[in-house]
Length: 127
Image 1 (cartoon, rainbow, N blue to C red):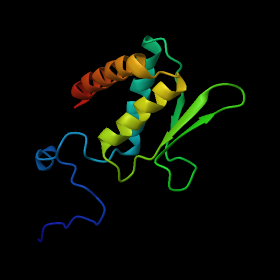
Image 2 (cartoon, rainbow, N blue to C red):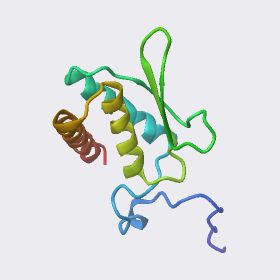
Image 3 (cartoon, rainbow, N blue to C red):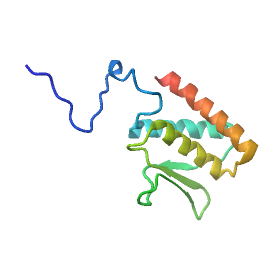
Image 4 (cartoon, rainbow, N blue to C red):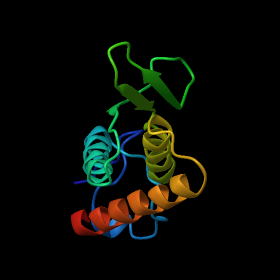
């Protein structure tokens, strides 16, 4: 019996086959995106930050990320995750949280570092 050939567009899911990939270069699937967004929201809450809603993809054609402020308060950060490295998606989500909270300069840098450390620790626990 001949070995099954992979279907176009489907990646290999077996851990032994993806050892050589650079961390954060693989695109995120929808479940990974939602898990990442939930964890980011939890960490932002712990820092006392306003947590936006997260969605994918953005409504605006061709955009990789958007921020929409709602009439009744609150914000929505939309990030395209398909065909993009996970590290870029992660940075777009974190930058969205910082933008919603108006964090720039030293405060923005400190919060970005804290959020990224928390997400890196979460990623090691889930791997």
